[in-house]
Amino acid sequence: MQIRTRLTIQFALLVSGILLVSFLAIYYYTYVYTIEDFYVRLRLKAETTAKLLLEVDQIDTELLEIFDKSNRDLIYDKNLLIFDHRNKLIYANTDSTSLHISNYWLNQIRRSDLIRYKDGDFNVVCIAYAHRFGKAVVILGAHDEYGKANLDNLRQMLAIIFLVVTTIVAFAGLVFSQRALVPISRIMNEVEGILPQKLDTRLEVPNQNDEIGRLTLTFNKLLDRIEYAFRIQKTFVANVSHELKNPLTKISSQLEVSLLKEREKEDYQSTIRSVLEDIQELSQLSNSLMELAKVSENQREMLTDRVRLDEILWDTRTSLAQSNKSYKIVFQLHELPEDDTWLEITGNPTLLKTAFINLMENACKFSDDSTVKVNLSANEKSTTIEFIDNGKGISQEDQSMIFQPFYRGVSTATVKGSGIGLSLVERIIKLHNGTISIRQNLPTGTKFILDFLRV
View: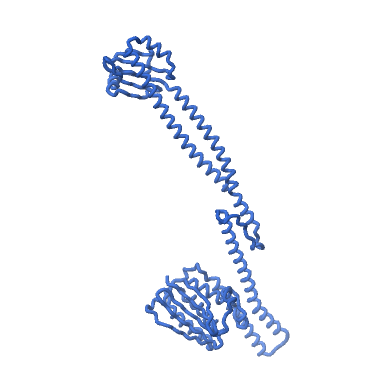
């Protein structure tokens, strides 16, 4: 069901419900008032008739009957009975009364002075009228044809008004919901017209203060993120293609050259070693891509252990020193923490070691003397690790892009690498509720600062 139809139905049901409750209340209170008014008229008629018969000497039953028949008081099919103080019927306006009266009931009326009830279709009023001989009883019953007709007319009129108003409200709701949804329809048409080739297109924001304007702004922000994701994807694919193309081209060229003519054994061995190096480079690139794809900020389930950062740093230093004897790693602890648990975080030791290896190896590669200084400090709120080299440094322009996959600055063009390491490091640090930042290390070099907050 469309929103326009649903809004129309809801609006019509709401207004119809309010009208129905209002009309029912009007009819109910009119019904109660009509019954009360009819009983009042019956009581006044009974009192007047009793007063004429019992207190006016000139009026007897025959004259009273003439008065009663000639009076047009809108009381239809009335049965009027008057009993004296001895329960003797002294007046009746009809020979065949439809009311059932007993002596016991007459005595009850005298004790209560006023009783009213419904006897079949008759509304009956019974009063005890005091006169000089005692208490007479006047019983008057009748059909309220006039009130019934008024209630029927009111019921019909309310039903017709209800149907007419409901129809008008449904039509008006349809028109207004259609007008209200015009901006949304416009947004839908504009969004449908945005193709992958036109991701720089943005929706027009008519009014930023209403809901439609905020919805449009939300769409524009979503389009910004989509455009950024597409741009990153294109860059990623282009960079992966480039990184894969270089070693594959080298392997293909070397093998083709080797097949051109017979060569010495040493030449074939040299070619094989070179091809193996290129294959290792491809393998390293593939492993880095797999690790990059696995690590995400949302994969908190990978953090299962309580690990000490100083122990992982020492283990990383040992592994890196064994793999490359020329690397020098200087470990510095500025001040011992008051509590050893300040050096602990919840994390994954394998991932942390991967991040530390990347930072230490990069620092050694770009340092003139292949040296990296590692500073560790901790307090009750966070643990900080600094990796410092004394190389050429990183320009401000490169610092803003250095964590993008495959990005390599101008100063790194002569150093072998894929440009994935720092992107992987950033994801690992964020996964461990940490931050990574870059600072210039005066007079030369770069400082990478890791901050792990304690939660």
